[in-house]
Image (cartoon, rainbow, N blue to C red):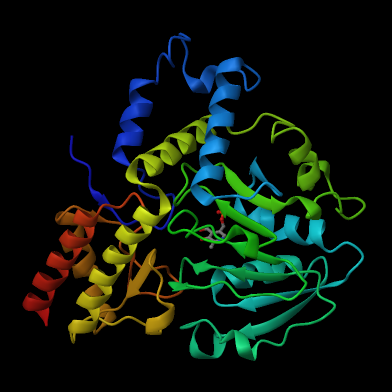
Length: 360
Ligand SMILES: Cc1ncc(COP(=O)(O)O)c(C=O)c1O
């Protein structure tokens, strides 16, 4: 069996030991005589899986007691609406930082529910950096401040979270959750679609400070009310059981690896290797300001777009797949999430150098 080096932005590579474990438990999960996919979400076996996954996630992220972890559906995109519906209360404005495509989508959706203040934007320079927090025009009346901690398409990352005075910080961490330790208490809400660093698509993790529960706008559908899910441990309807189970296996894999400090060290090393290779060549170019470059999504361009197709087909032949940049940006993008091994980055750098030698 040959597994490629998969640089997909999402759904993305999963750790091979996790897939092997799932394979070994596929037909008969620990003597139950059935697959996890086939069991009731209320069964003892599944409730244990769910609780263990939740406990492991809390341990990995060091989630304080005054926060609730929710396992939901609807993707991060549903959070673009759930956040305003649950946090606005009697306020009618919210602050957003615009660092790229995903911030912009969150802003567009929130605008359906309230007045959005874009407190800072890097749009004018084609979203190549995080605007300096000292320049942000925060609004005293805003119910919260929203950031996208890692722009999956543009490859721009907040390496430090901003500090807010009174309003809760909300972070879309879809593409960098679990990539490094973070201070959960600096945020009111963190949310993430699972399909990058957590597990398969279909699950959305939300970490919410408990004092923010219970304020959903009148008329909010109950499935969009955090408090409804919090009250019943995310089992108010049938949850995405298999995605929850697989995510639990990923959490255990991360713990075995040494947790998020160890993961961060590996991620930083992987990213720096690739950025150094890009910066040291006169052939490849990174469009992102050095201090805000993502450790997870690394876009780069070739001297001419006409070379892109040859690069991609050569890479594919070398077992390096899903390197095409997002259609809105062009060029290449290497997504190097937790499950992408360092050997994949080494192989990509080798390929880039030989392509440059041939075509440069
Ligand atoms: C940063 C970010 N936010 C939100 C989303 C949307 O996630 P979903 O497809 O789970 O709704 C994505 C998807 O790639 C993303 O990368």
